[in-house]
Amino acid sequence: MILSDVINKNAIQVNMRAQNKEQAISMLAALLQKDGAVKDSERFIQDVYQREREGKTGIGGYIAIPHGKSEFVAHTCIAIGLLDQPINWESLDGNPVKVVILFAVNKKDKNDYSVKMMSQVARMLGKEEVCAQLLSAKSAEELISIFN
Image (cartoon, rainbow, N blue to C red; front, side, top):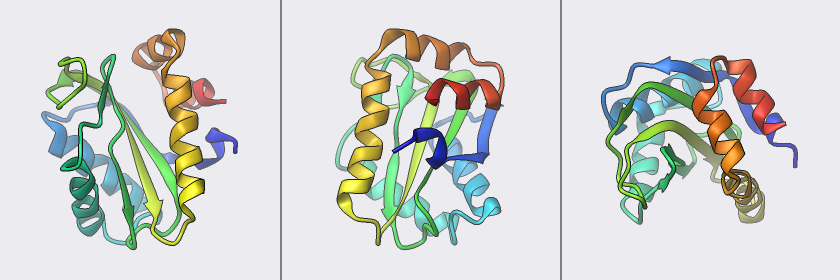
């Protein structure tokens, strides 16, 4: 799987002005709906919050990876938001979040596909240099190139 193929290039926002977790998820879901990747952003967001209740998606290092498996996702993809200011988020290291990587997973996709996608991103985020590049990115193109 090539990650840059599942990143929705129309759902990347740099300098995103979200004030909190809810706004960040909502803004990215709206971009996915506008592009047709999500059929109903509000219902998709409900599925994301269902997953949020199961455990922290702030993985540390100022990065969060919220995700939802939903019948309201037209096709599995990733949206990325680079916030202009860090926001509070329940995270493993207690730090706020500056990068939000939202996984929108079609409920019909086989579990192994979404698990492979998420584990590939997790492996990348386990590298300090990748996280540093994400945090300092200045454009959507730069964010995409990090995942190539």
